[in-house]
Structures are given as C-alpha cells and as structure tokens.
Image (cartoon, rainbow, N blue to C red; front, side, top):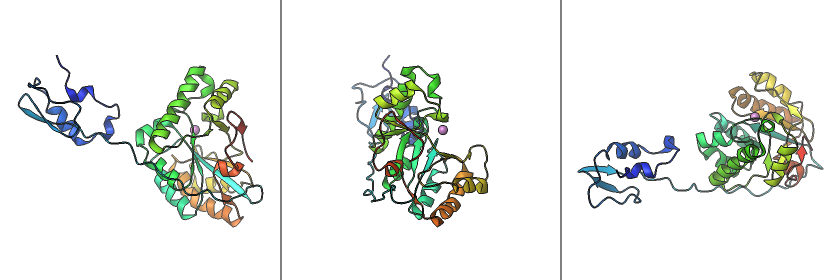
Length: 274
Ligand code: NI
C-alpha cells in the first residue's frame, strides 16, 4: 500500500509543525485517488479519496543574524570580565538578554544542542545580533570523559551543526559538561576547531538558588576572570542586574571570550582565565 504522502516527508520536529499538519493528517485516511496528488507540493490542497487534504507548509531556513561590529576593547589594558552562561537556551534566556542589552554587556553562552533543538534558534539569533558569543556545551550534557571517541565527536559535532544551521555561526569554543576533560576530549576539540574554556570563578548558582548569594559571588571577579553561571535558573537571571551594577562600579568591561583573549583562542587548548 502506498504510504500517505504526509508521512513520507515527515520531520522529527513535530512540535514546530503548524496545525495544517494535523488537519492534513486526518484528511488522508482514504486510499489515494488517481491521478495521485503530488506529494512534493507544500501548502497545496490535494484530493485524496474524495477528501481534501491540506499539505503542510514547511518552514524555510531561518534568516541568519548579523553580529554588530567588533569593539575595540583591549583586555591587556582595561579591566575585563567574561560572564559565561551554560546549559541553555531556556525559558529565562530572553529576560537575561534584555538585562545584558540594557547594560551594554556582552557575554558568552555555552549552549546544549538538545536545548536548541527543543526551543528553536530564536534566542541564539538574538545572542548573535546583540554581540554575544556562542560556545558548544555538547548535545545532552553527558560527561565527555565517559564516552568513546566517536561519542565525544557526536556530542560536539551535532551541536556545531544545529547552531550553524540556526545562526550561521561556526563556533570556536567549547566547555565540557562538569568541566570534565582529558586527552581525548582535548584531541576531539582540537580536530573540530574548538578551544576548551573552563572558568576561574564558579558562582555555584545551580546549587544555591539565591539571588543575593549569586550576585555577591560573581562580584568577586577580578580582571581577567571567567565567571561560570547558568541561564536556565531564574535566580541567576535575577542576580545579573545587581552583579552588573557591582562590577560596573569597579570599572569592569563585560566581554566575550574572544574579546577577553583578543582573538579566537587556540583549538584544543584549555583556558581558565586571561
Ligand atoms: Ni553545564
């Protein structure tokens, strides 16, 4: 029996398909009429067994974002701090982006491929437009040191691919989940053109869901610090306005990792601060 046309062209991202998919799906219950409808013509009404099926309009590729011009920040001469946010994008990421924009602060987001697949690329495109940097945090937040070389490769490569598809950005930074790295992780990162970025200041924001505690810890940054936070926690997102005020009062500039190092860091190499 001929498979219904709608199933043969189906996508795994069913949650982003429009209602037309559902309407169309229920409309193709009967056997195909002759001549059969062209399965490749999206958005077209197709006659099938006397029933009218509306085929889904597939979303086209996203309009890719344009980053702002590079800033002339020299972290060898000015006080710089690199704020980093891991494990997103999540439901609070948009609010965080609003806060960072209001303070003209740039940061680096180490995103999970699985989270990008779940929530779509809108937040990531805004990160690029706002001048933030994107980094690879793997696909599923598995400790890479527990995987085979091909497992490590897949975690990083799939995330590179979905971010590039959604934003046009080929990332040059990675952060291993849990900070767990070894020679194999380093070698695979090097072969995919990714520098390994760890941190010098851990806010422990995943454990202590307390706005005051998180902003106070982050405010202990010194020039050249890489600060670890997580944009999936509401308390962290709420702590950011205060910590930006605290650090701006000490004349810090909030920079991306590439700004911190004055260019793309070396693939495979480990960095913890400037
Ligand atoms: Ni993480």
